[in-house]
Image (cartoon, rainbow, N blue to C red; front, side):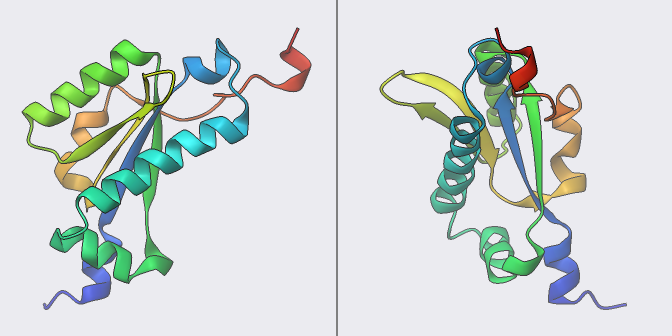
Length: 136
């Protein structure tokens, strides 16, 4: 059975990982956290814009898939980046300025089955922000 372009792009996924401690411990607001995710995502898409998977992913914008995960802190985020580099996974680590801290990372689009196993220690991003009722 032939694979259509739509089938190919539907299997593509961009993995994005955010530091949970930015919202929970450092109390960054939702907008700032969202910006970190967006920065990392766009940086990876732009850096790998000539990759065939990135082109296919962007050409089918209505079907873009993203998985947003979390790590506990900057050390875990940087360690994940090193693991991805060792595995040959193309990605970008976003370094927020002027703070000069790694806040998020994103891969270029990949088939989820090809690299999903590398993120098994990451949880889906949830409860990253402190609820207003929990704030002091």
